[in-house]
Amino acid sequence: MDLLAEAKRIEPDIVKTRRALHRHPELSYGEEWTSDFVAGELKRLGIEVKRGVGGTGVVGILKGGKGGKVIALRADMDALPVQELSDVEFRSEVDGVMHACGHDTHMAMLLGAARLLSDHKSELCGTVKFLFQPAEEHGGRGGALPMIEAGAMEGPKVDYVFGLHISSTQKAGEFGIKGGAVMAAPDTFKVTIFGKGGHGSAPHETVDPVYIAAHVILALQGVSSRMIDPVRPFVITVGSVHSGTKENIIPDIALLQGTVRTLDEATRKLAKRKVREVAIGVCRSFNADAKVEFEEDAYPVTVNDPKVTGRVARVLRTIPGAKVKEMDAILGGEDFSRFLRKAPGTFYFLGTMNRVKGCVHPNHSAKFKVDEDVLKLGSASLAMLAIDFGTPREAR
Ligand SMILES: [Zn+2]
Ligand SMILES: [Zn+2]
Image 1 (tube, helix red, strand yellow):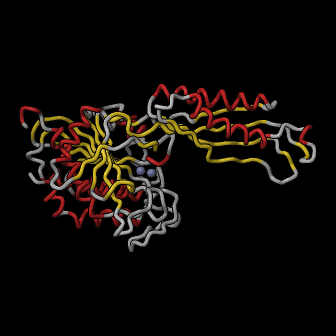
Image 2 (cartoon, rainbow, N blue to C red):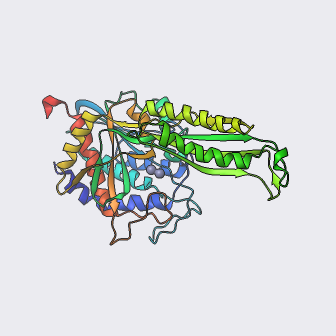
Image 3 (cartoon, protein in one colour):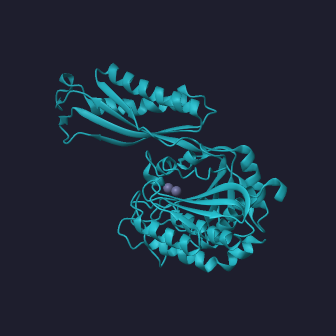
């Protein structure tokens, strides 16, 4: 079975699907048109479809003609609040919304894989579940958890789960893969500093939350440089500072918002505790009160099963001409991590960087552009993983 050759034959349809999705981007949990489209395509392939799985989520179930394992393949469906500035002719038709993270390509590649697999339904071992997930970009309560709560990983119970993300930092057509922790836990926090307002000419009669906020921002960087083992990746960014209305008024309150990124649960726990202690301690030393809140339900670290991931790499290497590279972890977050807590599996990447075609802008940029030549590789790889992991040892 040469799945890459088969993917090449359906490539025009994969690209067409991707462009249709690109024209109709929808924000997290608003994927109505998108889920209709996806469900329609799956039904057309004769695949059993469940709708409304965790909001707008769609699950397709393809039962093979022979017994085997249950494999889940996941694509996320949401777009971002970005006004598209790319030069493609199939630009977003929705003002201020764009598939700037490539989730349109994830859906198109997975629908391509669904077609390749349904073409081989009678020889297929086991069951393949296609998970079309809402709201990956939501942060906090992303769409993976509600899908799991709605039973997406059960009935039949998933043995292995795989997900693919398009990557602007890797060369077009190159797969990136890593066993163990591959993406960070993205914990967002809020520090509210309660000072005492007054006249800008008389700071001694106030507790100035703007001045104190400056100290907190600087001190928080000391958590990474002085309190966390330097061999453990850790990033803290304060991305939002709000206080005050006028130059000569000392306000009552300042609000800082930031994000903490870690790659293991122990460092994560320690980092969160230290952020809290440092922020509150600095505020106290200047006579202000502080409240530190971490968002609940933040995505866990994305941990690829090392053994499964080694096998995934071997499968990818059998694709003619494919380059498979061991990659470094990245400190972005992914709620695919939730699925990996339910079943062993791998989240891997497919590069789309191509200078000649102008595909050089990062994911989330208004100019983000994908080299569509790589889509067939993605479809073939997903289908190959479903077949390899679905087939019992004795049937291989
Ligand atoms: Zn994204
Ligand atoms: Zn993404």
